Length: 313
Image 1 (cartoon, helix red, strand yellow):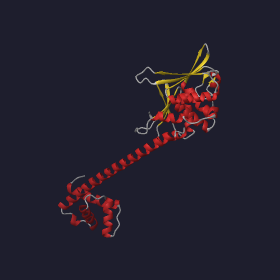
Image 2 (cartoon, one colour):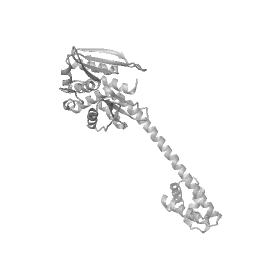
Image 3 (cartoon, rainbow, N blue to C red):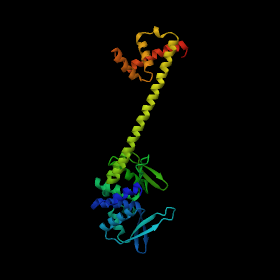
Image 4 (cartoon, rainbow, N blue to C red):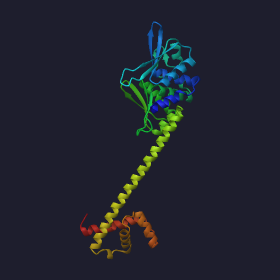
């Protein structure tokens, strides 16, 4: 089972009632249904590809409405041959859609009426329904974090983005073929969304894996930084030793002031030490404090003298 399916199965088992149940069902019906007219009147067809979501839609409809509902299952005609779960509502369609705030004299609306998501709990329930209807999320093991909800219109995508903003979750939308995709890529905000729709077990799994991987990545980055710093230290020390060799061969070391002679002696004794380490050793031996920049300045002077001897610029 995919991680997205795990999330949907967990959310589909949550108990909903009253206006929260209506908000969740409003999203599910709006995003998964189509209207048709037949000799029997108006029919609402709802199709989903997840059995838990299909059961959820059926139970919410039966608890709230006294409607005639037919259920069916069929296989998609593609290589995966996934099942499609369908519910056909044969009675009371107009009243149901009006109650869900997604129907007017113009037909199905692109977004629900404001009363459907009036409270924060209503909004959470609606977002849960939207994810159940057409949401997906990358498993936390993947290197890229990504959560998305696919909808049919730009207006509905903008509506979902505004709902998410109520909970400080920033989302964007992009067109994809004939659909519109609302997506979130920040790992912390994806965690906030899972918390928002009360997918607690999925959230725990997501955060545990994410924190573990981020910790490992941080250690790796620190190790890489340590290696890079060590390489820079070694390269700098090699240049300084080369400058010292040039001064020694030219017989110039004895003519330098005592401070420069001291750091030359330290570098030769500790060829692998950093400037900070040399400064600490210098202070222990002489009792005089010198900063890293002070130590660097002395080696700059030595380098300038070596350049004059060799004629380098």
